[in-house]
View 1: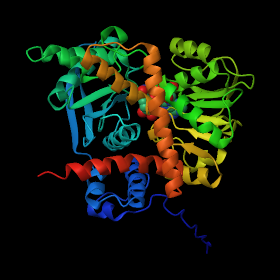
View 2: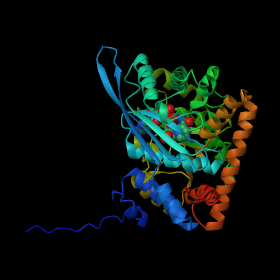
View 3: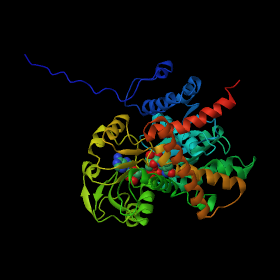
View 4: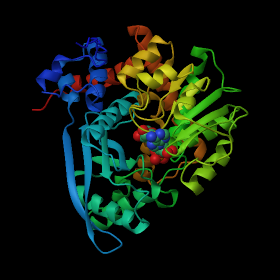
Length: 444
Ligand code: NAD
């Protein structure tokens, strides 16, 4: 007879909320949407946000799913799937990026849309939250195919978005060129209306075509602005600070380049091709050029290390700037950092968060740390609307003001409610949305 050992399962890190039952949510604790809503509702309960507002925020207003055919270079047609989720517009038009990735999934897009609602509220830009995605691998298709996918996706959702209704932007796998094709398609299709207002149907455009100076680096700059504001709280200073970066695309490479120029040392970097470490400091500018040329950091000088070794590298600050749910309880146990500044959206799972808290590692949450992108997107939209062009000093100054104020709002909420920074950031965001609902009421 074999003896069996009973292993006690880890208690679910996702607190079950009565609203989950009311809205018939699935019980999967690994589901990103469930995790995101649970965090939001926990903060909402702490400020006694009205139940009706909690229910509204627990589901997006609209979930749009489209399928559209695109001609592939070899002549055949392929059907693509696209999403646009419009989470909430109590504070202004829906706003959020469009992701091009082979694993894009409705629940992930819903989570990212909810995060956008929180982020816009926290930095006080007059937008709601939205997010989109196209299920494709942009690295595996030609430029012509990418352009046709973009134009067809734009035309598929065109009647449900607009410069005063829902304003997309770049995200993982999309960029300024894709935004230019998107805006051009929208403008050409709406020529009989006000063609020029169509320009601001998307932000993150190239500077030659209505883009804002400073938009490309904005999210990385916002990560740095937030860090600089909060570092004294944890007794660190930028000069000589040791930093590791997970994901070296737009957000990761810009944060690294700006920190490098301010005197910090980039010790370790990881991306989808591998990880490297150099205790003398990695030149973030040279690494960026290398990644653009080679499609990733693999082969760059420095010691190639494993993923586990990357997390174990002793640093002051770790900046996750890749995808969601990368820091689980497993990675959280390996991390040797004092602070985590979330450049990526939802990089830490609730189980990971719990371990980081137990270990005394401070987490600057995504809705604060990476809000610089949407902030400068708002500046771009304002410039388009007023036919003006701000200089880079004005963009940087206004961005810094928004980031510093959002960081202070978060710290204040932490002091008032005795919570961690993540809960505090949600509280500061939800408090603002709750006030808007109080004065607006609920239609009719
Ligand atoms: P990007 O496509 O420019 O870069 C993504 C990076 O992640 C790449 O370096 C890629 O190699 C790396 N990566 C992918 N899979 C990985 C894996 N399994 N392991 C390690 N690295 C991996 O994307 P981005 O625009 O820099 O966005 C990164 C994150 O920041 C996303 O969560 C995005 O939603 C968020 N974000 C972006 C912006 C923006 O303005 N671009 C704004 C706010 C938040």
